[in-house]
Length: 183
Length: 176
Image (cartoon, rainbow over all chains, first blue to last red; front, side, top):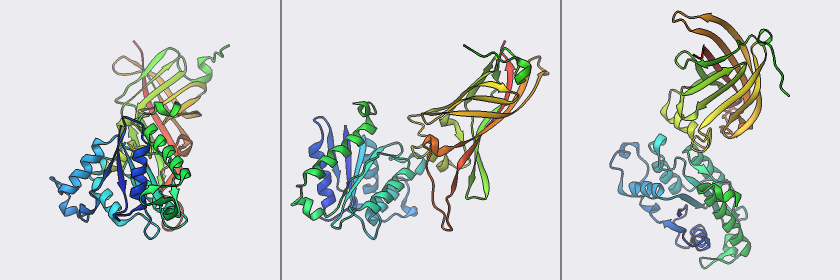
């Protein structure tokens, strides 16, 4: 199983990107997590440019989503919502809406923030956007508050967070292979 | 034990009958933005009646609405989740004139439902078929079947009502 990981943060020392890397280490043998690192290259959405061929970075994102079995998002929260760069990337990926790469794609949303709430509002908005695009949004809740204490030097040092991360991955993998739900 | 209800009590002719797909329709209607009723059809379906037992199945992929993007959204997990639940179904038995009691299945959830309406005929149509008509409907709470999408309106309330009217206009022909 191939899981594409999308971080909503561009920051080098991002807690959210670290969460995704940690998720990759928790996957069972045979499953692979690929971190998508093209967010900064996506231009601002402009319908005038939304033609074939799509801008290179946009085409790469659409292809990466299409090739993945599932997509795991980790997002910070900016002004109570989804970071603009991530929302912009999804606006590109969602086109054309009726046939976009996220349609029917199992996805899960997690998040971390320096404050106490763990980006819960951004996560809720991201789930809403993904559902509107036609994605299959897994029932996953993981809000890592006070992230600086739980993710140190890019490593998830909090055992509780690691356990919740493993649970989140199980829920997402179960959406790809529904038979896993019974297991 | 089974209960046999005489034909004259339910108005449903005995024997086996099948819906004529061209002259029958199955659809839904739901209040949108609180002011008007939006409706759509499921064009690919079959329905049959055997001695007062009505069974019908419709394909979610055949939902027709007037916007391509809305059509795609209705197929998605937000609404019908066609990939996992490609069909909707009703199966029930005539218990009174124009009333069928049974179960409806949408998005993998099965709940009791009663279809109500009118029975017209039978007649012998111009092509020599025995035919009668059923005009039936029921109201379901879509959220009971996991169709939970909604959007809050700026002035309060929500865009889409929970109660949805399901309609079947069936022209049924006696099986040869």
